[in-house]
Image (cartoon, rainbow over all chains, first blue to last red; front, top):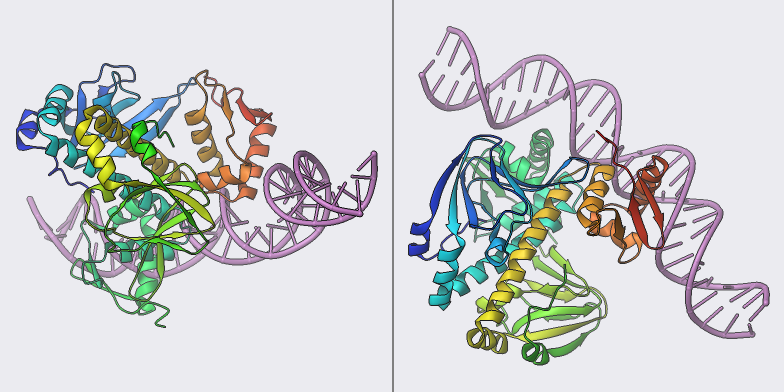
Amino acid sequence: MSDRDWLPAHVRAAAKKRTLKAGETLFRLGDKTEGFYEVVTGRVRMSRVDRSDHELVLFVAGPGETIAEASLYAPAYHCDAIAGSDAQVLLYPKRAVLAAFARDATAAQAFTAMLARQVMNLRTRIEQRNIRSARERLRHFLILNAGADGRSVALRGTLKELAAELGLTHEALYRTLAALERAGEIRRGGGRIMLLRSRKTV
Amino acid sequence: MSDRDWLPAHVRAAAKKRTLKAGETLFRLGDKTEGFYEVVTGRVRMSRVDRSDHELVLFVAGPGETIAEASLYAPAYHCDAIAGSDAQVLLYPKRAVLAAFARDATAAQAFTAMLARQVMNLRTRIEQRNIRSARERLRHFLILNAGADGRSVALRGTLKELAAELGLTHEALYRTLAALERAGEIRRGGGRIMLLRSRKTV
DNA sequence: CGGCGTTTTGAGAGAGCTCAACATCGGTGG
DNA sequence: CCACCGATGTTGAGCTCTCTCAAAACGCCG
């Protein structure tokens, strides 16, 4: 989900690092846009506050994710960004980025292509969230993330993190994994999940 | 979610209409990319088929939604697209679109900006799906979609459609609406939902 | 060896889903 | 104008599944 190979090196070099304490504000709704950010460490949440002072979380960004890409084309930010933990972020200055895109059509196209891919991925993820059953949701994830051979999935982090990504509690994920393994559908080991046979071997 | 004002008129004019019967294939994984599509009527689902012939739905597009934007920058489609019902779609030919972008930087930028907005919206939607409680999810939707005044939401379709958009069964939505209305939190009428007071009037 | 976080399993409760019946509304045709 | 019909809207009852709270085994690192 986080391929940032789409930014020309000289733009990446123009990025400014910023360090945030937990709870610190990165920008607020209405602030003039400086550019978009990439989260390096920690977490930053985008949110809006309704008239009754309730915070409405729009998105929580973790390491490797970018936020406020749309700010490149807007004069002001459309929501608040607040560090959920101590965090480091990179600011890609609007001016530098847009200038690079104007000069280098390939760079602009790479950026657009990246966004198009993201749209795809996000839509897929929403579809996944529509699946209620933990088992089916996990299957959806496994098949979608199986390596080229379609037979095994490499786990990038802990199972707890995977549970969060899937929108399940870690207990539910453990149980479902155990059930699938008992059913002979998968096998686990060495940070990987091997897909054995599927249920309908038609 | 469906603002297509980002395509220059002459590109929109170049679109080719295509009519599909339910179950008909629009394109298949590996097909050479012709361009991206917009669904006019009916529904088209993007899906992939795993080795056991199970269809894995990635995304279901309805009227006004576009699919396969990423195909502009890829030589072949990455999944299948199949009409879920009788449907009409518009094909925006890759060649014409890319040519327009090359000629007209503003058009290209508008497209990119649109994608960036979509990424935002989709992320917000995923965040919404993380909310388990039907009541909280509905509140999230209402506050987010309240008009400029922040006091009422215009319903675009039927409540059943809204339920689907929220990822709830229509029964659950009806009940939740009734409960919120009973609690004096909202009022319904004339295709609108009025937000009254919020629970914590601090 | 002693913590600390992940992984695992258990028991119970709550919330939404499923199935079902019924009301309501708009359009259609007699 | 009214009866009929299909789709939307509404409410009820029971069930399933995940979440929550709890406790314990495991693995890693100082």
